[in-house]
Length: 190
Image (tube, rainbow, N blue to C red; front, side, top):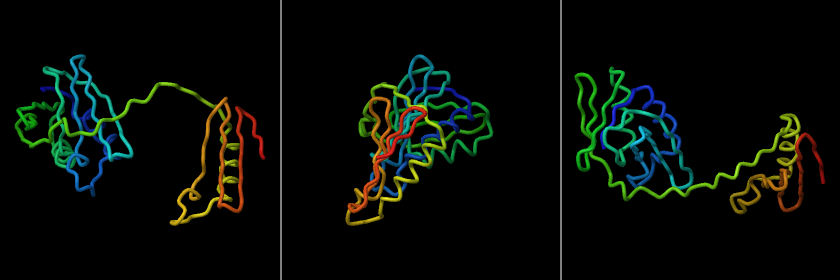
């Protein structure tokens, strides 16, 4: 893999995927970011903590396509401290060479086969347009019936269900039950 991209684009991508990096994990792969360079000058950075996955797509000049898994913290610190506008990244076996103006650094990287597989989400876009006031009011009313409990975590939050252009919010503490049904620009309560 060999790519040349703008430092600002790379920093923006790193800032996006930062939220899913598992810093306290014993698994080094979860402290890393997957860097995929495709032939159509598309660069995809992916991070995961096994509960949340973030993909960020940016552009750059892809000279040779490939995939590498880079330790996030080291890579992020190096890129932030570069003074150059353009950054060159080249994979040499299990090492990533970062070059910019009068600077060159090498980082030992993880095997890309070890990176967790991110499931693809079907693009079934469904939207429900609600008034902010109605949604906020319904959320506030549903929260009243919830209760924090370490013993019964299922009653800690609000259940959301979206079907047939209706959003249903349900909250319970096993004694009280609140169900709010929101329609587009309408609110119904039961």
